[in-house]
Image (cartoon, rainbow, N blue to C red; front, side):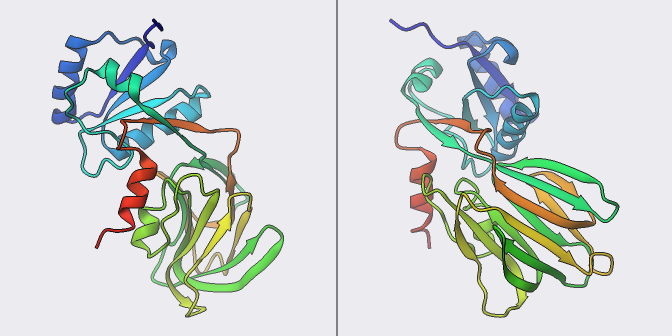
Length: 259
């Protein structure tokens, strides 16, 4: 019989999550995150993203099993089950998620490198529209995009901000990225693109001082940027665990039939 995995428990600082976690602690033994083989994340999608980012920052990434005590819970499993936590984790299906790597330079020449699990978004900072040059690999595809912003989404993030901006839903395993404008003004008919995940997408901010732009990688913001490049971080793959029948790829398919 295989030895049970060592579990760590991370809990969102809300009353609902803390109450649920108290019951988990009574029924299970947990270790520190540094010693764990799997992390159990109790909370919502935001707390799961925070946990995944922390593991990326620390350089030690282990599989994550989420339990939803938040609102949507797209990255999570249902809170209630007739099975024990050990049984649920033992039966769980693994989903690999590759985050985006973002490199940005601001008007002062400062550089920031962030990872994004859902999307990288460029957003105007003032009432004036942003003007962006869009390059895919080495070819300029749009010389001047006038818009409120633009984003690059992974399949895992394609049902989040990307979907709200009328971007396409991408199945997991599709090896694709969504490039989606936010309130585009010119070119008026451009509605975005679906690109291979081997693409490197570069945005150059035109009139960067007059029309300032911020970039946001999930929850991390960098303001007054002049250039942003985005590609898939193939060396930083994450693993999410889902109960049978509730996996992320099934949710993405289901989302496409919501009306």
